[in-house]
Length: 253
Image (cartoon, rainbow, N blue to C red):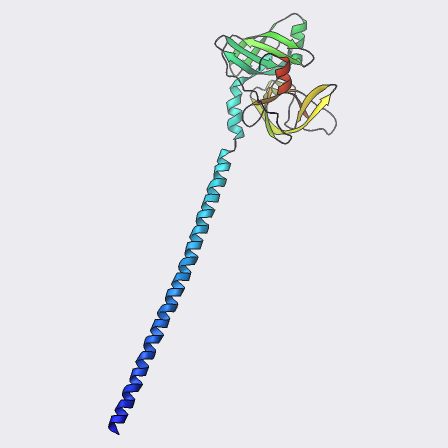
């Protein structure tokens, strides 16, 4: 009887120990599975974070690559001048330059009185610098004129591609004689008036802007300011001579 009891007791102890071992192994298995799942989620999050980081870097690169209008204007300003004819003022910009001197573009109507009176010189001004400009060529129908000065000045490039409606523009010149003025807007439309091609833009202009450059955000000339529509309630209706017209009538491109 004692042996039986001891045997029964011994069997009971053995079964209990085996149960404890199975429970431990199951807990370890579940823990390992949980750790594996957590690692998978961590790896997935790490991959998502890397993708997001790359996307942010790509967007930042695109933002950094966008032209800065202030820098574009600052780069173009040394090429833009006030034209003083003695009876009025306008604007002009350097289209070509070499060691012999520079050629500038303005509107014919800016120098018309001087030209018709037989005069051939005007004063070209930027900040404290003044040069004598000679009227070399006029195209009355296109309202364009070429001036020359005996000084090498920085020139503005002319855009090879026609801008699209909605493209941003900067307009430089001397409205009311205020040299160094910059306004901004967009290309609003392309029109033909009385057989003449025009580029409409929204940047504000005033008398004195005539002859100044309209540039894109690459600092390239896309037009020459020439006029604006004036009427009750009218705003932002500037007109420019397209660069393509300039190049077709003057031998400066």
